Every structure is written in structure tokens, then in C-alpha cells.
Image 1 (cartoon, rainbow, N blue to C red):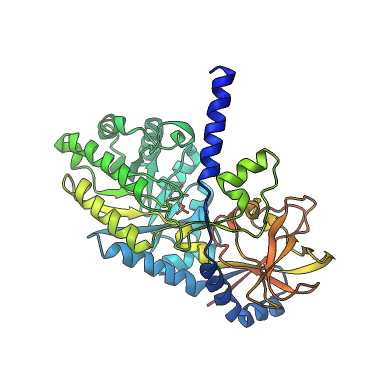
Image 2 (cartoon, protein in one colour):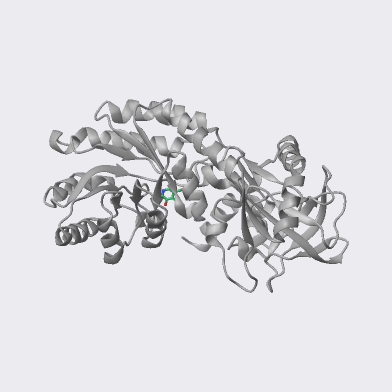
Length: 437
Ligand SMILES: *Cc1c(COP(=O)(O)O)cnc(C)c1O
């Protein structure tokens, strides 16, 4: 591209981004969310009084409720279904244990997670993930009564066959399919075009019983991506010889269901805000919040159920498996911490740092910071910062409350997904975990 052409295409793209700003987060959604947690504030304050600050607070009742809602949504539209909780989304053992008690198996993506699953007595485990080591495959074979390996490549199939043969065992298995053959997601699974070769090769591996497919697309605000892939998969299954079609007894359609509240963003989390940030232009109001709506789980289940019947079951009826993580666990854990220092009317430092969540989440994602000690249904501008020696240690640019002072107890609700399992033992010690319900 010549410089002029490149410049023009950059400017066109930038103006398209600026002309299509993200929707504003509706005030009523936000107020409803905040008031729900303020109504329950005495429960949370009591936990801090008893256990100190900071805390990760797990609400088991919420977890059970989400587990049941997810199962019911899909059980009502499909004849044979299995559910596997994606351990990586929150690896606290009590969460996996509670989900097992509520009819879930576990989806693990490493030997470490497999060990956790075995140690808590899980008996229905799927093991997926790229680059499984021989030691990890051996561990799966040792527990073959309870584990199915979702393989990632033909080479992994050969290695699993060799290991299972050596141990004189047969292991159940499936193969992961690449959902996007370009870019970063190429690292997962095999391309659709090599399904036939893979299944044929597996017939020469008597110790690995291949009987299904897995795919996983991430970050689905609606089921469109999943449905498109189901259509593609149906077209491929149609072309398989009967002998290979008959091998298919399950299709695992992965996780990636976005929680019903939708995605809540800071201005910097939106395309326009991120563009301005890179241009070093101030995007204005820090208390503007943005919103990407998502569909309810019953919308997901109805549309996915219809697509599976239309594109898959006409060729091969089979069991459908699900691997939700975020949808199940997002609402079931909250963060509680307190104000240590007030450096200005609009600047406070808290006892916890964002090492508790392991990434700079709140620079892009918006979650309300609730002052449980002085509740009010108004958000006031204030830099609410953690105590790590980095300026990126930020909880938010405001708090909900009348005022804020040293000693106040703050809460960020619904932090169950991709926070606790990414925690870092960095500078500060980590919050204690308290479980209620
Ligand atoms: C991460 C992951 C999941 C869970 O995704 P969520 O977005 O948390 O629902 C499920 N399956 C696989 C293979 C994954 O890698």
C-alpha cells in the first residue's frame, strides 16, 4: 500500500468507528443492579466484620441458581445433553464441587486442573487444550474411567494411542475443530477439512475411542457465531461415509455464553474510546458507561437447539455437550475491600490491589464500586485506586454512595469470572475467600 492509500484507509476506518459509538449503559439497568446489592449490604458488611478486609466472597446459592437455569434452558430443547463447567473461569475448588453436586461435569484444560478435578472426586471430566504433554495425557489415561480427552491434533492422537497402549487401557476421546482457520484461534484443534482423515487415522488407534467433536467460540453476546459453525459442521458431517458418521456419539459446542447483564464498558473499552486513547485525546467524562447487550440463556438455547436439530440431527442424532464458564460463575463471587487513605476529595487508595483479579480489568470493563458504608443511589467521581506500586491499579473512576472516607467498606459485585483464577501473588497478599449460602 502506498502511504497515501494507507492514510486514507486509516482515516476511513477511524471515522466509521467514531460515527458508530457504543450504546450508553441504560441508567435503569445500572440503578437496578446497584440497589439489589445495597439492599443486601448488611450480609456483606457482616462478612467483613467477621473475616476482615479484603475478601473474595462466594455466594453458593447464586451458583446453584445459575447452574440450574443453564441446565434447564438446554434440557428443554434437546433430547440428550451433558454439562461441563470450564474450571479455568474460576478454579476455586468449592465452586467446582458445588457444580458437581448440581449435575455438572468438569471441563479442564491442563494437568493441573485435571488433578484438581480428580482430587475433589469428579467422575465426568473432559480434558481439552492445545499442547498436552505426555505426562498430562498419562494422567488422563490413568483415570480413563472418568476422563474423555478432547484431542487437538493428529500428533496428539498418535501420542495418546502410544501412552494408552503402554498402559493397556482404552480412553474415550473426541477431536477439537478449529473455528477460525486464520489468526490467533488457529492454534486450537484441526481444520474442518481434515475431519475425514482424522477419523480414518483414529480407526488405526484401537486404544483411543474417538466418538465426537468439540468446538468453542468465545465471547458470544448472541448465538450467531455458534450457529454458523453448526451449519458448517452439518455440511461436513453430511459428506462423511456412513462408517465414520456412525462413530459420532457427541458434539461438544463449548462455552462462551455472555452473562445476561451484557457487557458493561468504560469509555476506554469501546472502539471509539480506545482510538482516542491511542491518539492521546481525552475522551471526556470518566463516568460515561457503555453497553453491549447480550441475549438471555433461553434465547441461546432455543436458537442453538433449532440449529442443532436442523443441521446436525438430520445427519446424525447425538448427545450435545456444553462447557460454560463465565455465564455460570460471573455472578457468584464479589470483591470486598476497604479505603485505607483519602488523598484528595476525589482520590482514595484501598487495602486490596488489582493483583486480586490479575489484570487491569477496570480500565476497560465497567463495574460499579459500591460504598456499602454510605450507600446512595448516585455515582460520584473519584479515582478509586488499589495500593500496588503501579498507576494502572484502578478499581474505577467513581463510587456509588453519599461520600467516601478511610475505613469505608467497598464492594464490586459479580467478579466471579476470569478474576480469581488469574490472581497474582504480586506485592500484596491476596484476599481471603469466604463462602456463604
Ligand atoms: C475457556 C473455555 C470455555 C469457557 O468459556 P466461557 O467463556 O467462560 O464460557 C469452554 N471451553 C473451552 C475449550 C475453553 O477454552
